[in-house]
Length: 330
Image (cartoon, rainbow, N blue to C red; front, side):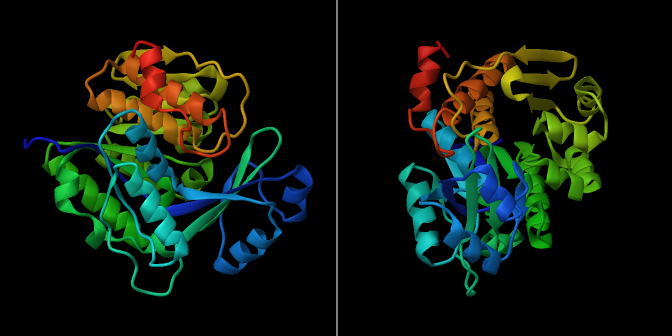
């Protein structure tokens, strides 16, 4: 096996996040499904953007957030995702490269605008996401650079990107390339609504192509259509090498064969915004895994990263995660 040049390459939607505070009345008025990610068209995106409160714009997208947090921990990351040559595309490209992340995907050549996710954060810190996929949905197998995949210890796939047929082909292509290079393949289930739409396909993906799966409690229950977390745990342990399952304030559970680790949640003074919590957890876990750390330490690193992200507005860390990990002796 050739020497790895990066720790993790993420493949996902290249999205600019637009975050604003909102109250419950706003969600009701605009018929928004609280706490969920809903796909919208460009007209709906424009209307909601006009209606939302003053916002903060920054490059985002689930897998891109994970790679950004990985970089904050000191890891070497790469990202594959599609933007256009427009203002938001320039923001995304600048932000991700400024973190030292390799981003070489050719921009879209049509008139489809760069994707944006309008995130409405209510006073209870819950985030409601309205996503216009735009150019990000045009990602296909031709965008999967074999050299970048083969050079990464882990290829990390974002479940949100499973909607477009070309992206599904890109996922399978990337997974096959990674395994041919004797690398690991990881998947985030991303959202219960994603699982509900593609349950059979996700099960097949996990069973046939995935070594490390990330899911929260709702997602793993939906994947296996069971009523209890313990039942879901028993299902998933037989289908992939490692499952990292997050449970909000209950922490996380790591399963690998007969090995089970229950990790307490890191204490947070105030939960401000849960946007990106799962993305950050995956970053911490994968950083630990690619550095050869034990699984329980990987889970603790995931908890440290997610705790930092939910303590402020936005999905990217404000305090260097490597400093927080060092303060914990990790």
